[in-house]
Amino acid sequence: MANNDRTRKYLLPESKMPQAWYNIAADLPVPPKPVLHPGTKQPVTPDDLAPLFPMALIGQEVSTEQYIEIPEPVQEVYRIYRPSPLIRARGLEKALDTPARIYYKYEGVSPAGSHKPNTAIAQAYYNKAEGITRLTTETGAGQWGSALSMACAFFGMECKVFMVRVSYNQKPYRRAMMEVYGAQVTASPSTETESGRAILAKHPDSPGSLGIAISEAVEIAAKDPEVKYSLGSVLNHVLLHQTVIGQETFAQFEMAGDTPDVVIGCAGGGSNFAGLAFPYVGRNLRGEGNARIVAVEPYACPSLTKGRFAYDFGDTAHLTPLVKMHTLGSSFIPAGIHAGGLRYHGMGPLVSHLLDLDLIEAVAVHQLETFASGVQFARTEGIVPAPESNHAIAVAVREALRCKEEGVSRAIVFNLSGHGHFDMQAYMDYHANKLQDYEYPEEEIAMALAGLPVVNI
Image (tube, rainbow, N blue to C red; front, side, top):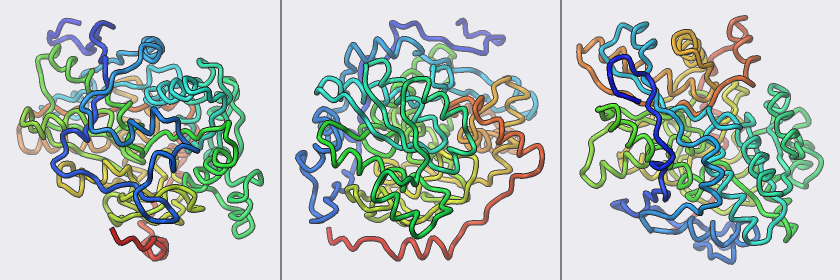
């Protein structure tokens, strides 16, 4: 743990784990727009959300308290894998011949292999505390489904997962992992729901999307009072739970005798990005720091860089409330890139709000660049990253090479949100030259955006 030149890893003792989640809503100079009822288009009430979420999470969704205490049963499960390590990427620095100091926060140490358990454990706990015994959800690449399946197993709950069909076929071991934890996994779109059957009637060969899978999961929960819905990204309470990542990183940088100049995270719905970045944005807002904050998304699904900041549905069947976010349109179905966790038409409202306020930056990268960076990282640091995490690595590499060109040394930190042990087919396809860069589908997105709901608020 000493911070000498040979040290690569900074490990916090359990006593230094955060005792509360950080709520960025408390520090925002301008509050975000309210969530709207899909029918009335008026601000939702707790009763409107009660069919989907337990009241404790509804309270967190609208809270403006700066810190929200982490319940002891949640902390007890966190201790299985938290605190996660902050690692100095000296091998990558050497390969790039850069004066930059590159660090990564490694969330792949969790049993599920990603950052997702940080909120899955909390959501399972709060549902269990209110007497719920069954949760339903969606998953793209499978990280979220794996995490919630594990959390439900810990708290003795049933779990139903609708997995985006293209990922269901690409990643059978993720599906198998969920089933080991006891979850029931169905490829989406499916014939089990009205929304799934409607999609299949129009598009029998649909590869699916997170928006479609959300519709199916929400439909199940809305029709059964004994079932609640659980979401792995996007919503405020989900991003809140992830802030243990950034808070741990504060303390670990103190151990390293350093402070980050650039903070980077991949972004699909926004959860792992928010987990690392929100505490640093908060520092910036309070005048305690001046780090650049960069969200990285796939060029094939560029909600932040090409989408419209508008009210939209979070799902394809329009069963969810309306949120103001950067969106490509709820009917947009992205290309089947291997970073399944980043194939969502919208971005979390809080992340979108920060970009609108110019408090963060956003950049889109192509698939081949991300895999090239991921392979270089694996060969220099030893960890095979998840395809989603490769997006953050690609921009960290860009920033490090920029330091080299400018002859300056900056500290760069990115969130390595998960390992890629269940994504080896993606790497096989990359090395076989089967992957391609997908052009930004302007016409398809224009069509999807044409269907945005009309909101006068």
